[in-house]
Length: 51
Image (cartoon, rainbow, N blue to C red; front, side, top):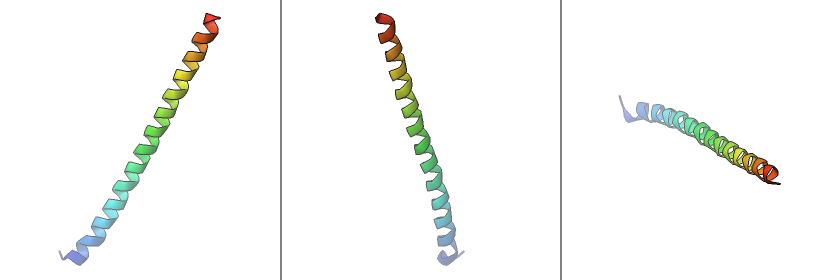
């Protein structure tokens, strides 16, 4: 195959790979936000029970 045939295929594969990374990073952000919310909720429950 010539380079002119390989370049478009490589570009398409790169775009697909980067799109997959974006979904993974977005999911990690959501997981981190859920962890923060759970930690804050637990802290509030502990504070309420201490009073």
